[in-house]
Length: 48
View (cartoon, rainbow, N blue to C red):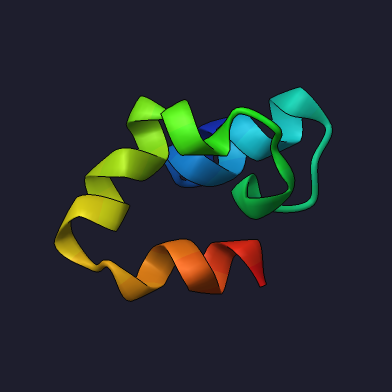
């Protein structure tokens, strides 16, 4: 099942967080940074 999910969702599930915005390492995350770099508002959305 994990294979059918996007890379960010897979990472969140593996780390046991609801979304990557809940991850304590999100600010340094290379996976999330690809999205954040193209959409600066995404960081605020992820942090909720």
